[in-house]
Length: 438
Image (tube, rainbow, N blue to C red; front, top):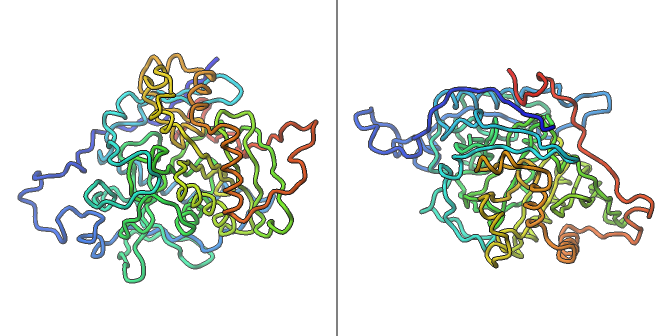
């Protein structure tokens, strides 16, 4: 029997902010271009809220519960709801029907019939993972400042803090900002935009990936995940960004079995452990642990850099408060171009990006939502995956790029087909059947 899920509903109206034009005629003149945007014309002279994160997140002991520190999540969700009350979203995502599909993995299906019509269309080639930044196309410097929740910067100390209004300092570096996704797929859906004024294309480096891990660590909640889509893996904007949102159910990929890949002793200095997913429709690698966030960021970003430099589309899920990373090389767009995806799947209009691959599937047609099953979710996601042969080839290159050497030791013994190591997620502290209740 399928479980229906509900989330808090907040009235909203379709945002027309990003279609701002002559409607402001007659208002008093403002600095810059007059739109209070995130570009060079307006941002350097502005003040925005500032969240300063701790320089080195401590690892919680076995006795500590990381969910006790909920300040970051509560702050972010409160500011997100404020933007909803202002009518800055293109539609009311909290009114979308959501359910957990019966089955072993518990895929989550959402019905969002209007998103593909109201979402910004892709403006670049989908067969190239790396493409130069194009200022003429939509990018986040064109976003209004009222869509920004706060700056997100390293405070340099042992404690985090929040300032309601702080000048933008661009003397040393461009600011990192957290903004709403005006076409959200879930409650609290935001964008982390590293160094927004530097106009970086959608490509991961060690610094940006470490920033994303810091955000996950600050959230200190297993229900708050970050995701990344490369170009060619259904990123729709070629301006460096990560996505994040809050969902109080475990993702199917977090419950999937994994098989540990043993590493040669000389390559284990970072403390990072690597596994591969088992019995899941999309082949992927799982990175966890590390002596520090930097160690984990270095290993995973090195893998991502090899993928993007070699034109292999990929998606990343940052889970378990930044302690567990899922990496998925994928080939769905390539199969589409070659005519190898069935018309039945194409008709669903689902573009399997990081959230869909992780098991949260946004459906555009009511018939697909009502008929959704674990088998149909599996059929869709299986088309995303590399073949076993290609996956092993890519894995070998990734290991070389990340300085990892697989040991000659067997991954598991014959009688241990796979190790079940799901992300530890406590039961949600909300009423039964609800995703969010405040």
